[in-house]
Image (cartoon, rainbow, N blue to C red; front, side, top):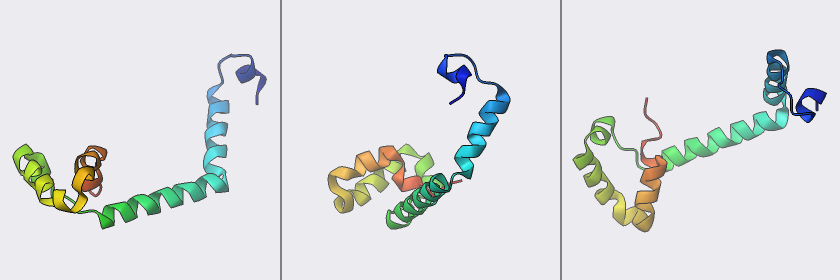
Length: 90
């Protein structure tokens, strides 16, 4: 750890860039990123995705949630709040 950070001082932009570079150059961090993207892609594939035009209309979105409620039961609304039903949108 640099002495500037240990003493509570500011770090230079060059030092900040080096730290960010080391983070993304770390193989373990890269592996965790790959695992996270794989997991999120799998979640997006396994859960029903709401079309963009349905999500734009609150009434139709409510109907969509009622339609998938028997499948996900009490998890429907927490999953909706987490954005699981619209992970693949652009």
